[in-house]
Structures are given as structure tokens and as C-alpha cells.
Image (spheres, rainbow, N blue to C red):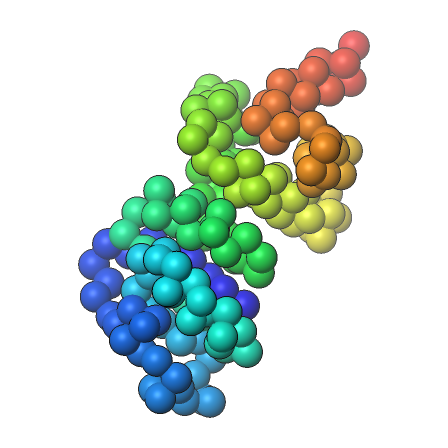
Length: 158
């Protein structure tokens, strides 16, 4: 499992500095600073049996890391909260600006996680009706989530 955490103050070792010699089986997570270089990605792939907590400096770095690593990412709670607000808060609908410049794989992951969380909590969410379409490579572009949700809500209010 890989977690990507935003912490501009973190000054721990990189995954290359950490190396396999520092490995301790009792560690639940190996915590390293992440620069998203090719060498770091290769090292991470060689250590696929470890759980990593990758520390990055800002949201842009987190998004680049998520796009590069693609699988097994746990999305940061700050990103998820911002995404939910951008998609759901009537006073601040801002999904398009939130999505702008982010990799489609990241927005797809966010929408899928929101849908899954709603289902796990036993809630009927309009978003879950579109989750399959967003998750598909040839489906609906995740950037259009806000439009589809508003259309669905308006049609159900009639």
C-alpha cells in the first residue's frame, strides 16, 4: 500500500537514501521523502512488498506522484475533502477548477472513492449511478461530473 502525504516540513530520507538495508519488518509504513524521479519509482517497484508513506511538499507534487504510481494509492483526506466541497457545496461549486490540470486518473480515482464510500456507508448517492461511467477509460470524462450530478438532481426534483 502507498500513501501520499503533503508535508512541506518533512525532511526524512528519500527512498534511494533509505535503501533496503534500513528495512525493519516491524515498520507498518516506511516513511520517505518523495521526488517522483524515475530512480525512485524503480526502487519503489523493487520494494513492492513494503507499505510506503511518501511525503511530498504540495498538492501538485501529490498529484504528479499519484499519476505516476497509479495503483494502490490512498488519497489524502485533504484532497478528498476539497473534492467533495468542490462537487457538492452549492455556494462553491468549483469542480472544474479543482479538476483543471489534474491527471484524469486522479479525478477518476477521487470519484470512484467517493462513490465507494457512499455505498459503504449505506447512502444512496447520485454519484454512484455514474461511477461505472467515470471509471471506464472510454466512459464519461470525470471533469463533467459536476454537470451530470446537477442534471440528475434537477430531473429528480421535477
